[in-house]
Image (cartoon, rainbow, N blue to C red):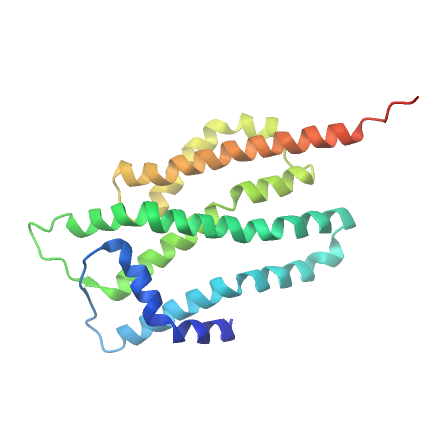
Length: 220
């Protein structure tokens, strides 16, 4: 993390421009002497943790691997690349789909009454929290697939919880999004529902493969 944070600090200015881009033409300000350097360090540390995530996940697996069976170890190694890919997919969804309308709504709301002067620390905290949360939520199908392979959950069990999952998706949408309007909440909730449905389908696929593998070979 220290190494990747230092690397991220070198490219911090580029990362700033990348995070500010979804907001469009916006003038950010800082009003405290230490705010800008604190924001620089926050961005560098967050980027450093994200860059180090594959190595951290590998270390976590190595730590718990003595307690896993050979079959469980195999499943963990297989899903490790998908954890990274789904996290990247979630961050991309948040960056390209969710951030532009959310930031536009927040900046323009009430602008006819007061001139918006957005603190850069507030903006960066909101954006990084949102992107990390969306990336983490997109891990749902991978986690459920892993649990299905271990036999902890089944497609029938997941399907019976569909109503609860839909309610939970809209609650998470309200918690994750920085706005209170139903449009932005739906932009988060609908993909979450789709991910849950995908999880049910993946669990069903795993069950069918295991049933097929368990069937005895026909004797001649």
